[in-house]
Length: 106
Image (cartoon, rainbow, N blue to C red; front, side, top):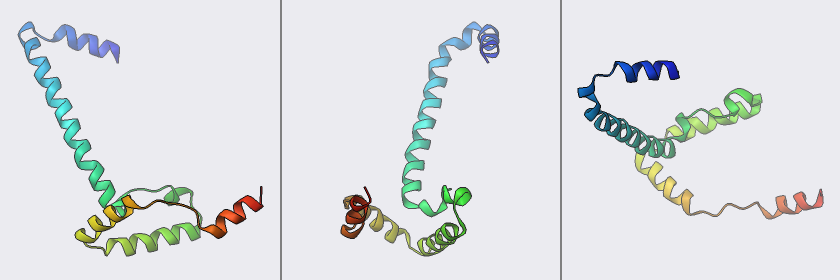
């Protein structure tokens, strides 16, 4: 890889070097736009992303994942946004019976 990069540097004419910062800026801006569009997409459409249970899950987990994807795919865009904001404000905690079972086993 370094040899290829060194060859590219040697082969670049002198009059193209002032354009290199603009090319780098274009690449960085493209990466920023890609990140700004991919994060909200994965937050709004988690059913379209690949999950661990797709490969390593048992048959029951895979069936549960299929049911969840089917139910989540029927939600409208406004419902997804509402769910996203509602989900973000929740504080997740274990149910009281699970907490008691967890500490009883220790």
